[in-house]
Amino acid sequence: EDQVTQSPEALRLQEGESSSLNCSYTVSGLRGLFWYRQDPGKGPEFLFTLYSAGEEKEKERLKATLTKKESFLHITAPKPEDSATYLCAVQAGSSYKLIFGSGTRLLVRP
Amino acid sequence: DAGVTQSPTHLIKTRGQHVTLRCSPISGHKSVSWYQQVLGQGPQFIFQYYEKEERGRGNFPDRFSARQFPNYSSELNVNALLLGDSALYLCASSFTGTGTYEQYFGPGTRLTVT
Image 1 (spheres, rainbow over the protein chains, first blue to last red):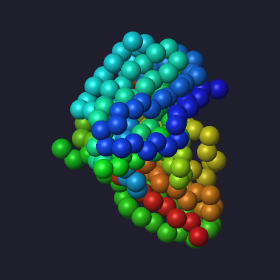
Image 2: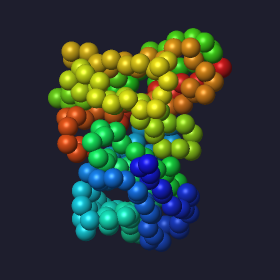
Image 3: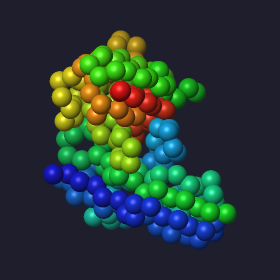
């Protein structure tokens, strides 16, 4: 069964303290891996799509990377406004749906 | 440009009642997907529609149904509401329903069943 696991469940950082979030996946025929940011009570906001191992994408303080088994979301010198839940999702095989992990709740303290 | 819009924002219903949730996709997008998100979990896939045809259905009971209209907007219907149906219902819009594609989410409808 296709599965996505995110770790840690929660992460507290001091402003400026860089770190990484992990998304490991077990799927048949990965077509794409997606990162979203979700603020409390709101819909997920699209960040990145990664298609193949070795691919990297960057946006401001965020950088996403992909291997054959996992993806990392690196946050460099985070600010309090980066506090949110970060969701990882995959699209695989012949399915049209996104399979999501449970997310990592990030809190950045000033 | 307007993003994905959903209505209503919040809804409170009683067990056994019926509810209809509405979604308008991004202009030019032809596919709409519905997801259910309970607190502390990632969204779970319910349905996908592309060009007014159902392309996929998640592991939800037949009480859940949906449709897509000629203007690509969509409705999600839930009959015989249960307490466990309380969740954030998300609509996602994409340009196409084939290949690999980004899905853009609306703000969601918060459904509370009492």
